Image 1 (tube, rainbow, N blue to C red):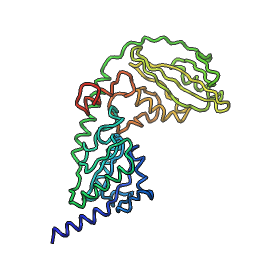
Image 2: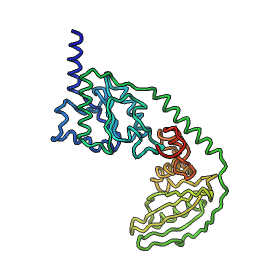
Image 3: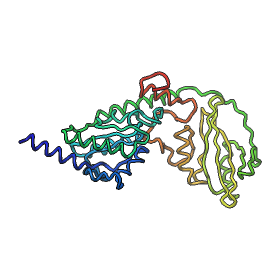
Length: 332
């Protein structure tokens, strides 16, 4: 009798599997087509739900950033048993296009047991349908629940390795400054009339006063702060691109800072959007903006603990090969 009841329960579960409505990345682009009339996944009893507390399974779709994985772990923990995990897209199996990215994990089954996989970039809707039909068949046959692995120690070990690398990187002496720089403001050292763009140069100690002067002349909009790393010359160049909102003309104000002392005055009080742009340059290139009220990671918060990843002497690809693929050279 117990065996018959178990078969009935498994049959019922296989006919009404609800999925956590959480699409992590680009691997989910083709997934919404399952809800359209040609495929109509509700014929199989599938339905997306916004809360993990009513869900039966979770689908990993696309690349796995650190933040994505941590969110998926929290969702999985809130899902009632028995619960299942399926994975779609090459990125969840091998890292895919992002196999050498410092900010992504490479395999979903490093964190969960996985009951089904579908390859592709991106998987087509009928591929997803085949995977879900297979999951349905497995559940009816008595599939055991998927489980969370020892993820805390794994994530902690990766982050500790990154912090160790950052400490070693900053302990190295930087090359001396060997860089030719000439102040040209208010003249243009490069002029592009067709683009209405003038490139000029100032020392970092005069940067705030020059930008303040330009703002008073109508250059009200800060478009970006571009950074260029020159490790052999021992400097990082910064380009503050501002635009005159009246006539569309632009000024790119170039300055530089030594790599060994990458400090520049913040301009957030002149251009409020610099609050966020300066944070991005800080985390990606390691430039410190003195006077910034909240200088901390923004995009990489929770995603990277190593040295500034966009500096040219920070070889993130080799680090990934060593850490995630246990190799000593490029390639998988």
